[in-house]
Amino acid sequence: MARLTISDAESVVMQALWAAGEATAEDLIAAVAAPNAWAEATVRTLINRLLTKGAIEAEREGRRYRYRPLLARNDWVAEESVGMVDRVFGGRVAPLVAHFSEQGRLSQADVDELRKLIEDFDHGR
Image (cartoon, rainbow, N blue to C red; front, side, top):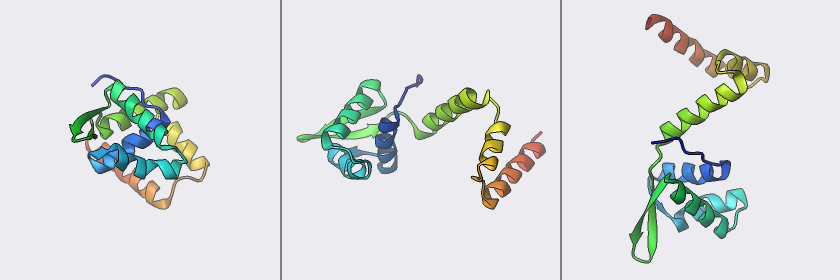
């Protein structure tokens, strides 16, 4: 699928849809409206934008529609993360990790996981 630009608000709806697998507008409104202080109309607008972009599809089900994601979460995460690393850290991961370390955002579990990833990377060569 070609790169889709999904806004922060649209990504909230997508996260709910990815978690559910499929949902009606009412399901999505129930999942995202209150936590984000959004009106029902706002959520419906976001759903329509996602439909227009081709990120989701709709299937008529009686008097309502059931929505399913067409954009895979893994594809979106890959695009977003590469884009952020490119924009903010010049395409390098080490400065990203250093930034989170300097901000106190790395837990011991994170450090242990990073060590394991590096070990696996070194052994895979």
